[in-house]
Amino acid sequence: YTFFIVLYPMGVAGELLTIYAALPYVQKTGLYSITLPNKYNFSFDYYTFLILIMISYIP
Image 1 (spheres, one colour):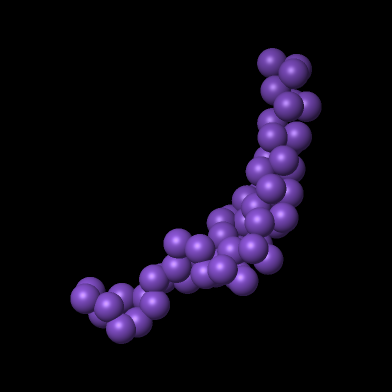
Image 2: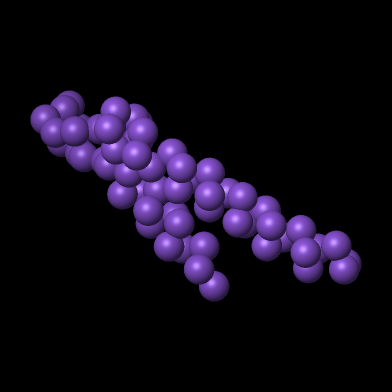
């Protein structure tokens, strides 16, 4: 269990840094974003979603 105390925060930090590094590319290309108008009349911004995911990591 003692390795968990060290490895878990390192894993979280690695995930957050990876997402943070990808943010400029996602914003520039619009990767996985769905814009209006479309058949379902629904919009989804992947860049904002990633920021919300990063905020949700804060304990």
